[in-house]
Image (cartoon, rainbow, N blue to C red; front, side, top):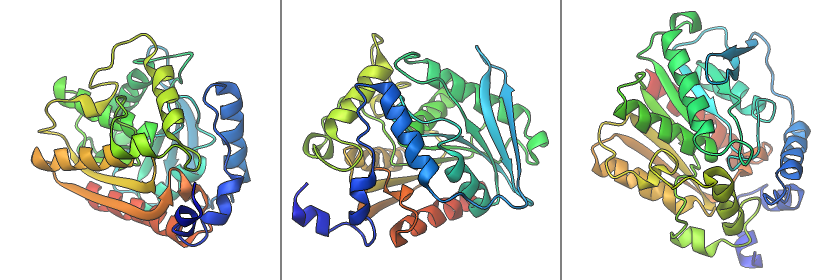
Amino acid sequence: MTSTTARRFAAGLADAVARFPVADLSDPVTARRDLAALAAAAPAPDTAGMTIEDRTVPGEPGVPVRIYQPRRASGALVWLHGGGFVMGDLETEHPWAVRLAQGAGAVVVSVGYRRAPEHPFPAALDDAYAAMAWAADHAADLGTDSDHIAIGGHAAGAGLAAAVALRARDQRGPSIRYQLLNQPQLDDAQTTWSARTFTDTPFMTRDKAAASWRHYLGSAPACAYAAPARADDLAGLPAAYVASAEFDPNRDEAIEYAQRLLRAGVPVELHQWAGTFHGSAAVVSAEVSRLQIAELGAVLQRGLA
């Protein structure tokens, strides 16, 4: 990364770059350990007044979820963690889930889906879809109804969320009110300008994005349910919020997906966060990170209303 690029980072982010893990996806075990260490080093969120429950919902096999129930909730969110389809779990996503539940006043069902390369596509999608179907079937138990449930995620999790929405539309599955797509990973082709250009950006680079797709797809041919950017028709999908980071290989595919949703008649709110990089909201001390986290809660609250 050039010094000019570094100077353009939002206040508080540039100094944090060196503390981010390398995320070498050629070694999934080490990459998972590094991400877990990064999450463990973050300030613990305040969970006072919140009920948190771990359980397993039906699937093939059963899918572990963690349910966050704030004091007062209107609606629910099925949330899918990031990590390039390879990293991340319920523990690394704990701070995100707490802040979303608090910020939106919504029940959050965080999903511990199976990860690649041990479990390539469609394992993660099947788990995510099973969790969404369970949430819709048990909406009353979550303190809401089946018409007020959103699907969302960060990075690879956002790509999975988009795929769940596509599958639910096509298969006349559970009703989804809203999509919360934060820095979504959507396009295995990797042909956008940002995917071709960002070779040395923090945490996620072109090569790492390509490696994550290789792990996730395995020997399966790419399709719209694996890489939603491949979908021919986006009409009839739920309204969406799409956020992208300026210095992220995934930036342009997120923006282009939002534009395609708009052209298909889907209501969309798009926010391109200047000066940020993939996953930079983990630096919660930065002003821009606080703004991003607050906005996710606010737009989810509006989307569920």
